[in-house]
Each structure stands twice: as C-alpha cells, then as structure tokens.
Length: 308
Image (cartoon, rainbow, N blue to C red; front, side, top):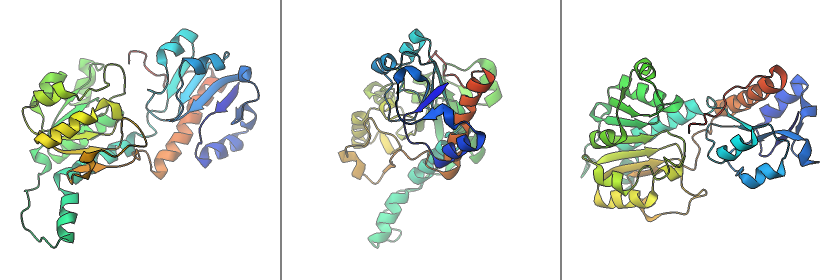
C-alpha cells in the first residue's frame, strides 16, 4: 500500500523504514493521488472534506501524535477511512510540561526572578503555595490527565476529575474521584485541561465558567488552545478570578501576542510539550507500529474513538 508522508518526520522514522526494507511503500512526493492508500500527518495538515476528495482510494490516516482535531472524523467515517493516532508518543512529555507549569505558577518563578533582578530581596512577596494547598480539577482523564492526577495526588494535592467517557470501573482503577464539570469548577482552585478539541470542548473555559468559580484559580492548558477562551482568560486575570495562567497551546499558532501575556503570573511556551528526544523516538516508532500492524498484520491499532 502506497503511503504518503505529508509532514516532516524525525530522522529515526526514515532510518527504521530503511532498516526494515519498507522504503518502496513510502513517498513524500505525489506521483498520483489515486495510488495513495495511507497518509501520515502531524499538526499542520488540515485534513478536511476537500482532502478526502483528492485521495479517492484512501484507506487510512495516521495522525503522528495524540490530537486529531485537524482531521474531519465525520467525513472519514462517511468515506470509510480508518483514522488512527499515536497516543503514547507525547503522553510523558505533555504530563511533565503540565507539572512544570504548575510548579512555576505556585512558586512564582517569574515573579521571583523579576524581584531578584530589581534587587528586591524578600520584600513585598505574596506567599507561595504548596502542593497540599491545591484542589485540582483534571478535565480529561486519559493518558496525560491520569499521570498528572496521580503525580499530584502523590505529592499531597486533592485531585478530582471530569471525563464523561470513563466507566465506574475505570474511575475506580485510576483511583480518582469523578465530578461533573459544574461541580468541579465550583470546588477547585487549580484547573488543568487534558481533553481533545471537539465541538463539545471548544471554549470549554468560557465566561459562564469564569462566573461560576467559587475560588480564584490557577489555570493550565496543555491540550488544545481553543478549549480555553483567551478573551475570558484576560478578563479573569484582570478581575483576579484567575491567579495565574500557563499554556503551551493557543487558539491560533503562531500566536499573536495578547496584552495579558506580559503579566508575570502568566507562563507561556510555544507548543513544545512534545519537544523531547524520547518523545520524538516514541512518535517515530509508534507511527510505524500502527502502519505495520495494518499493512503487514491486517490489524487496526489505536483507532480514534468516534464518540469524540
């Protein structure tokens, strides 16, 4: 089956293909769209309805990475095109990025550096928080969210979760208490998002949620930018309902700088949650594993759940 790789992949990906003798299956250039049965993409390709028309004999799309909001899943189902992702590839690095954000926020890392540079030694500091002060609501308790929840529990935080797709037995296995979203918003003082971007989760943190807060919160987003409404974040920071905000993802990328970015309680990174050496290795190997299962074993692995 001819496979088109539409975005750059790590060198290891191509090295493994060469080592296993699969080179004849893969191309980065289009000779004929009709020949393409499998397509591999990452974040930059928007695989919409028009793209499906371009590839009439497409059988599978492999999204190298965990998110799949750049693929029209409904159209894929209509065309009977299988959509798979690589959910483990970025899970560790995204979980660690989240923890680094949380520590940076509650220990006021940026504020402390600013004070040192100003020579303001131990003056006019707001007291730092400890992990045990946190009541964390994890929205999306999948691979990343579960790791975040378990780590924070181990460190002494109270942690509860929101995920409508988990069964009672799954919640029990994860040892995380389940809440509905509204209850969780009213309970927490730290809110962290780890859910996919869908019609249901776009603007999941909106003005209604901001107005529902009982406690001022720390807000963290390492999932998808459009889950958190940036205008509402700006309002929340201004009105001090949001103590601090950390994000690795943005509604539009590259991001057009917003005024609230200059606040020292705002920590930002340019979508680098998966930017580790080991994540790139896992991405390459997991993508090829999904491909080989389908081509060589006639099996489908890590198919995207259509319920999203």
